[in-house]
Length: 388
Ligand code: ATP
Ligand code: MG
Image 1 (cartoon, protein in one colour):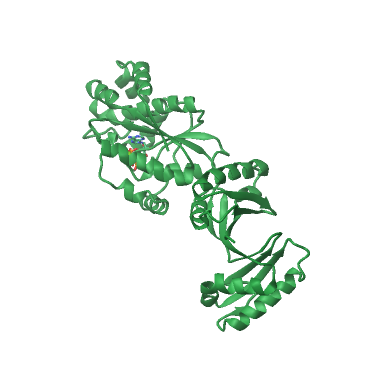
Image 2: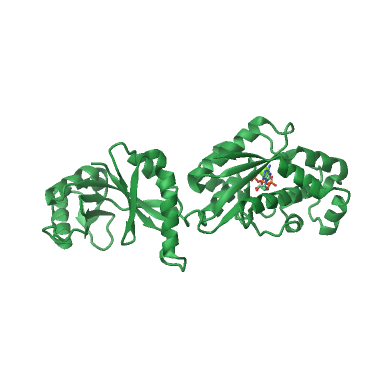
């Protein structure tokens, strides 16, 4: 018999969010994420969700690792099944949790009995298994209030299960429960982190990347595709919209005062992202901006970039130090890819002395001679879509 996975669901239990829709969304997300690992039955009983392999082919360990990245789950444990017999349960605990039983100083056994025909009640079974383990492991003392290790026993319909305390899950809310946003993904460290943080709040994402071939290389583009692919472990499947940006940048270099170039360029990024958002039903834009990190991330510069769109701009990294952002990027596994040394379109034609406190009036003046609608429409028409 294969092991199975028990999940503890996240905060919707406490909040006003509709519990039913939370569970339905999570189930659908789990099914998609589990697909590569075989066929699983997923069902919820008394605030625990059970992920049960349907045959011996299933890769339960692969599924276990994948589930740790699914938002909406706070705890994950792997449970080993055995015959519904007190000694089979005891032996399974000794075998399956041997490492943990040796390492702990204090423990207790906690039993849940769904099958009421089992000859012992929960307390009797806990006492039996606990007593035998206490005898078998010299290092162990019983502590029912604050044990280092809890041995969980579940007597269910077809089998009994043994597992230890849950490992932490990804937390957050199931992706999709809070609508959709468009995330601006550069090749840097910050924007994969900001995408992760917004997805964690239950938001499905489309990604937009601005690409300035030949000023930026095919490798730079592949790097961004790889970052988006890494993020699917958390965000689920997504579309990366790759926008040809060269024509706009060349036009701006011709017509726009050098010190305003970056902010004007970012206004075009916002306009185009909003067009993408309209087409995919997204209700917000997400960036990796961080207050004061670079010249285009002062409050004045952000006011100028935000002024050209109606959608809210979510900036989850806004108050974080670089080190904090790096820590998250390491945790989610995007850091090593982010630091690959390929240029981004933002580093093409960078002004020597960017204006730190630009005004909307200056923007309008700088854009006066541009056919904004046409430039945006042409860029949108040239979008290449990559499904991940
Ligand atoms: P990152 O580490 O995410 O690249 P950064 O500190 O380098 O951020 P900028 O280059 O000024 O900052 O970009 C700020 C934000 O604008 C990025 O976090 C990203 O959301 C967006 N952005 C920048 N360049 C691009 C691009 N080529 N395509 C899509 N979005 C971009
Ligand atoms: Mg960047």
